[in-house]
Image (tube, rainbow, N blue to C red; front, side):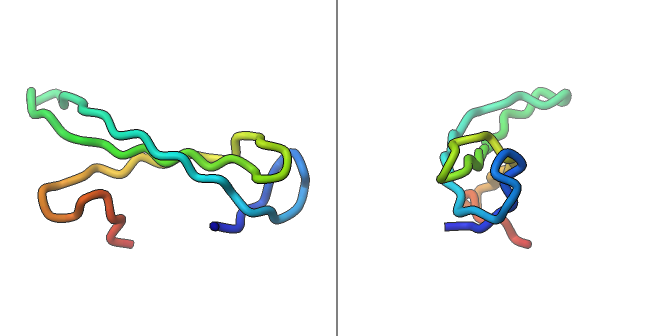
Length: 65
């Protein structure tokens, strides 16, 4: 589990990560798949952050960084 600073607890906590996959259409009319990861504090369940990862045919949701 990732360790992040929870703004509500005020200390580092383990995060629960949920993912959702959706298709979006860009301004060129191309359909892309986006994976959204939402991070919530394991202790108080507060939302901490989220990030969107564009999936291409080769990366299957793996962030290259």
